[in-house]
Image (cartoon, rainbow, N blue to C red):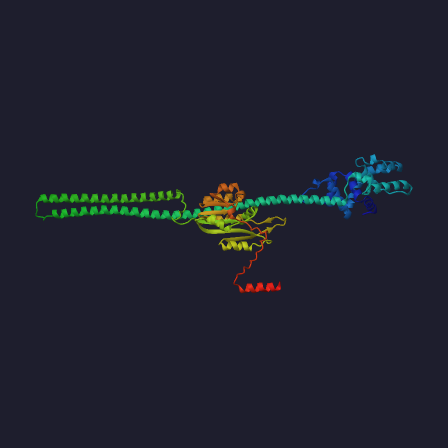
Length: 522
């Protein structure tokens, strides 16, 4: 950089350079200058930046980069070439008159233009008066506390930098908040989708098991039907064969009776011929009966196949009935407790939940199969006593540690795991008892009811969602009889004990000696 260029930037300073750029360059020229100087705004175009931001960034970069100062100097020199020739053609008195006229300097662009002329001017010895005036005006215009610069309303370099950082932080905060909201919505969508897919999988498994059972039953029924029809056809054919055999024996017996020696008369021979013809006719009739029996057997086989097909289609169309519980056996109950939800609901009533009373109300006269409690642990709170109390009551405790995110928010819920556990346990339960008031479980309750079990909800009426109440088969409200309240400390002090008075009996020697000593002392 030449000496003249360095002199111009030293005379102007940051505030003066900012005013010169603001007055002489429009927004498009400032954007082209920023691109030439290598200023970049990730994710945004340079032309989209505000004019004040471009000016501030160019001044900040010029303070540390000689190439930026050189680019600014060349552009300013090009933009002020014509005005600079006119300015140099004026006499010193005219220049001084213009510089001393506030109205002229406050006109659009004049202050920055003449401020640049004064900073770039080379003063001759004979122009000492003008040189002193120009320096005074230059000092007045470029000083932070001057009236001219104050009228421009330009902030200081430090204020501009701080404002820029504040704006950037605000944009980042807004962006992060929007991303957080989208992430939470996406997480809820994924949870619902996972619960639905888990339910579909459970239903598919149940459907596959039902189809396997129906196939086995259809095969057994077809086998029994086929064997029964074959037995019936065989019995009918046996009867027909036995009947034919009996008739054949009768005919043979008749033929034997009719048999005579060769010496008998012609009349007897004619009779034998007639008997032979009768035998031939009977043989033909026997063969026709056999053909008819074969045809009957084939027709019965076809009917048997049609009957098997009809039985299979009927069993496929008939919905599977819910497995009936054996008479006299108690219903199987699974209790699932959302401890986090119940804890905050009970704390609003200034008490704690009585789990003995809760289990008694949930189970009643039925058989408890699976009691499970879902607990969220915090590092600051010791819950070992509470967990030990649950385990003493044969309640399975599932624990999860409360996690703290980078933004300070906390995450710790069992909604998805609780729903998956209920879907897994539903096929082997008759009643599902959900101890929670969270409305997010409404779709879960509807899904479990479609699978077969009865769903009951237990919770505090004020903290139970209306949709959950409507979806459940039965609702048990929790009131004061399910609560444990802390004992109040006793404030009143007990009254002092009264000393027993000693009663002296007439025959008591000890009392008499004490009275004698008292008289002696007195």
